[in-house]
Image 1: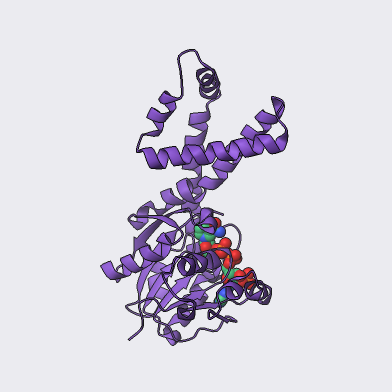
Image 2: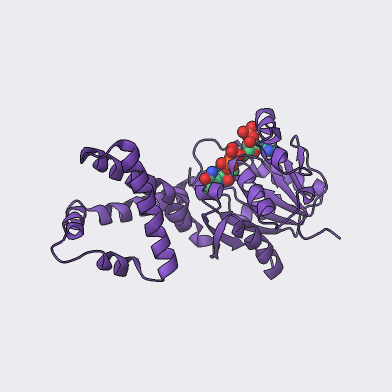
Length: 288
Ligand SMILES: NC(=O)c1ccc[n+]([C@@H]2O[C@H](COP(=O)([O-])OP(=O)(O)OC[C@H]3O[C@@H](n4cnc5c(N)ncnc54)[C@H](OP(=O)(O)O)[C@@H]3O)[C@@H](O)[C@H]2O)c1
């Protein structure tokens, strides 16, 4: 009987490594329960370095792309490599899979995986690297409540998790998958404005970073809506009101809505091309 926390991670790239880091540092699993298999020699060398995963967590097993016997696995390779890996999971005896490969649908994963394999798809975002991802998960037909709890527990080690039907994952991709990029663009513009107004760049940068962090914490911790918090900081005829008027006049709200709906649409298109091209798929993946 396989141990619940024994885990094979296929792909030790940015996301695979971030997940393993989250799982081990939170105590979800012990290093000797986790095997990472990574095909790229250069990347394996990084993972083996003193500051890499294997260096920081003695006992963690690092393989060169081989698939050892395992019941639980995470698929953390690029979408174009997903089919090839899934088709080999039967040999390893995998019975439960969490896939983070963007745009690869459950139907395809289930058809490539061994019969009856419980599959859960997750859409994390880049903030998994600092354990603050906003992640959505969707369960396949063979995944029951214990499988969903298992997958959710894994993703919770790198942030917050919601469960949605798979048809909503393109919306998740455009909103929270691509979301960090929109916030970075806002940060860039705010820093430039600070510099234009006379602040040294490092000062403007520090003030903007902490303004974003503080605003996110207010949204997360006070339970107030974004609208109520914005009203609370906007005094009549004040500075914030003058600034907000310009944002509205330049269509900032509408631009964000258009940006996110365009990203959702692009995720749908890329999802179709991943399906059509299968293992030969190259180019951008959803949320990339
Ligand atoms: N990065 C994000 O913000 C983000 C957000 C949401 C979802 N995702 C999804 O997460 C997945 C991983 O993304 P990533 O950014 O971590 O990509 P990545 O850094 O390219 O990592 C994937 C790693 O897996 C290796 N690999 C390929 N085939 C393999 C095989 N058969 N066995 C073992 N290892 C293999 C790759 O080697 P090669 O380089 O030699 O191919 C690469 O080192 C992608 O499917 C992506 O869509 C990423």
